[in-house]
Amino acid sequence: MATQPCSYNECSFCGMYRDKRFRVRRIEELRAEIEWARERAPGVRKVFLADGDALMAPPKFLHEVLDALRAAFPQLRRVSCYASPQALDVRTVAQMSALREAGLTQFYLGVESGHDEVLRRLVKGVDAETMIRVARKPAEAGVKLSVMILLGAGGPALSLEHSRASAQVVNAIQPRFVSTLVVTPVEGTPLFEEAMRGEFEEMEPAAITRELRAFVHGLELDGTVFRANHASNWLPIGGTLPKDKDAILATIDAALADPEGAPFVPDAWRGL
Ligand SMILES: C[S@@+](CC[C@H](N)C(=O)[O-])C[C@H]1O[C@@H](n2cnc3c(N)ncnc32)[C@H](O)[C@@H]1O
Ligand code: SF4
Figure 1 (cartoon, rainbow, N blue to C red):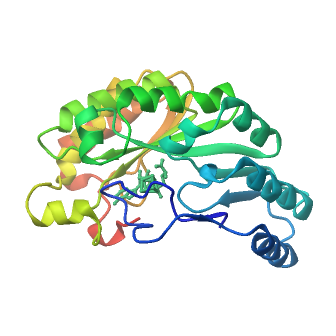
Figure 2 (figure 1 turned 120 degrees about the vertical axis):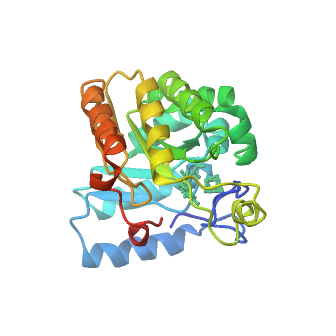
C-alpha cells in the first residue's frame, strides 16, 4: 500500500475508504514490505499500488517505490494503480510519462458515468467534460488506461441517458480497457442512506441488462478490451471491441429473451 486511502473520498457510493484520512506512507515502511515480499515471492511480475488513489502521491515518492520494486523483482513486468479524476488532473503528462518509464504502466479510473446529473449525484467531483479531458492524458503519456462504468448509477429514471452518455464519454476517451460494475449501496455510504430514504432505487437484473445493452450498443471503440465480468455483474461477458461487439450484443439479447436460462450471477456471489 503506497498511500492510504483516497485523497478525495467523497464519492457517494464508495465505502472502501470512508472515515480514513489520506496519507502517503513512509518510504522506509514500504521498502521493508517490498523486502518481505521479495523473500517470499522473488518472481513477482505484477504489482498494484494501493489504495484508492496512489497517483496522487508525490511523483518523487512514486519513483522511489518503483525503483525499489524494480530492484527487488527482476521479472517485474507491470505496475498499476488507481487514478482518480482529481489525481489525473493534478499530474502532468510529463510526470505520467516519467512514471511510465520507471515502470508504472497502467491506471484504473472510475469514470462511473458520462451523464453530468448522474456524476453530480454520485459526487464524483468532476463533470463529463473534465472526465474526458483528464482521462486522455494517460494515452498521451503512453500509459494504458482501464476505465470502469457503474451500471445502475442513475437508477431506473436515468438508466437510458446514463448508458448512452457513458458510451459517448468512453468513446471520447478510447481507453485500452473498459469494464462495467453494478452499483451496490454499501452500508456507511451516502448512497446507502439515499437508498434507505427511497431516494436511490436499485435496479433489477433485467433492467441492468437492458442498460448494459444500451451502453455496449453505443460504444464505438478502436481496439478496447471490454469486460462485464466483475463479481458485481449479473451477466459475465467480454471481448475486444469493435471485433466482438455483435457477439456481445447477441449474448445480452439472448439473456433478455430468456431470463430464466441466463447465467445471472446469484445474489450471494455479488460483492466488491
Ligand atoms: C476503489 S475505487 C478507486 C477508483 C479511483 N479512486 C477513481 O476514482 O477513479 C474503484 C472502483 O470501484 C467501483 N466501486 C466502488 N464502490 C462501489 C460500489 N458501492 N458499487 C459498485 N462499484 C463500486 C467504482 O467503479 C470505483 O471507481
Ligand atoms: S471512487 Fe475513487 S475517488 Fe471516489 S471515494 Fe472511492 S477511491 Fe476515492
